[in-house]
Structure formats: structure tokens, C-alpha cells
Figure (cartoon, rainbow, N blue to C red):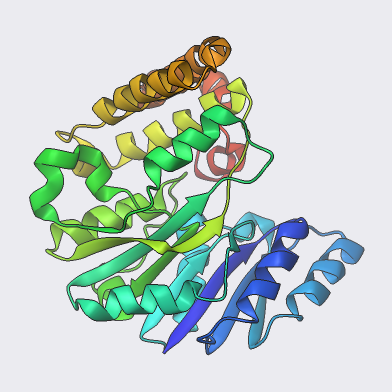
Length: 310
């Protein structure tokens, strides 16, 4: 009924916790397809391979680093699956309980028009107050379903979906032609836009939760938003004409109110700097094709993409 697909590259201890949680799910997957990007370091690759073997129903496929592609590698995993539903995860998304798969399946089976469902991402103890609030803003504790009718109300958030933890109905995934190839980033939202435009729905399943969060530096905020904007510029036919920056402004305003109301006013400068770097990264990304190559390589998070795709 369901397979899990997880790209893997230089994992830390979170992957071990993820495997432990998958091994005790109330509904077991038929297979867990690990797409292991090798490092070329024999001992490291052997260590990771041994770790992956701890997962029940593990199928391990090794790929060279030069062949990794955000969409293509996931498509390769999907091509090995015959399951009705496919759950894509990242190696650092740790389920909070044994009901992750069960909760996803309940949401998908309630409505055949739901083509995609994504889970709630909770912060860990390492991130600060601002990131914790951002997680609550993007991943509230109430589930919801989005459709084409919500575009005017939600803008670009209608297309929001994250392959950190997302389930796809196989028939819809195949109708969409799988994930786009050779994209720098954002293959999940590009797929989600196609799902919505084709008349299907996207479910946000708050009960299907994972612990997943990062504390990024200002530079990392800049580079991630640069790459995000590059992907939107490259697929402008999807993202042009849909409200995108309004949601970011609302997040900043709501976060500032939260900080003042909870006596965390001293974090406002940090919020301003974070938001400024995100905004600048996004703006530069939108005009990446007008920038000299050396600046693009300085601004991007994913230098390997530009070295491969020019």
C-alpha cells in the first residue's frame, strides 16, 4: 500500500532516530527506498550503508554525487515503487510517534481528490524563539485542505508543500509526470502547483508530525532564498501573477507582535536582520539571469547545480 523514499547524503544521528521511528509504525511500509549518494570515502559510505540496513524492508540504491538531482533522484526512487501511496522524507525528519504513516493514509483515503499531503514540522531544542514561531506560523496545529479555489485567498501558500515529509498518490504523481528534473530547489512546490492546477487538492495533516528545523546564519538565509527565487524565476509560468511576498510580510509582522507580547523585544533586531537577508536573497534570485556568474556562485546555496547546469 505504501513505500517510503529517502535521499541520503552524509547523515548525522537524526537518520538513526528516523529509522527507529519508521521501524515501529502502526502501518509498516512495503519498502523503504534509500537513495544513498556516495561520498567516495569507502569507510564513510560503508558506515552509512550499515546504518540503512537497520531499517525494516530497506532497499538501498547507491548513486554518485554527480548524479544527484532533487527531482531526478526522488523519481528514481519512485520508479522502483509499485505502492498506491509514496511517502517522501528527508534524512533529518524524525517522526514524533508511531502514527505518522497511519495519519497520512487516513487523510488521503478520506478524499480521492487529495493528490498530495504534507506533514507538520516541529522545531527541536536547538533553534531559537524566532524559528519556533516561524514553524508555528507555517505549520499550525490544525489540519486543512487546499484547492484551486484558495489561490485568491492564500496566494503562493496554496502551492506550499514540503518533501521533508509528504505523501503522494501514485496515480496523481504519474499524471504530473513526476518531479521536475534539473531544478535547483523547490521541486515539491512545483509539483504541488501542478497538482492544484489539475484540479486536485493538497492536504496539510497536522497529526502527521516530524521534528525538523535548522538554525540558519544570515548568509544561509540569503542563499536559501536566492535559490528559492531562482526556481520561481525558472518556472515563472507557474509563479508569475500569484501573490508571493505578502505572506512573508505577514510573517514578519506577526513575529514582531509575538516577540513584544512575550517580552522578547530584544530579539527584534535579529528578526530584522534575518528578514532583510531573506528579502535580499529573494530579490537577487529573481534577477539571477542578469547577474555575472561569479556573483551567482557566491550567492547560491547549491554550487553543484550551477557547475552541472551552467
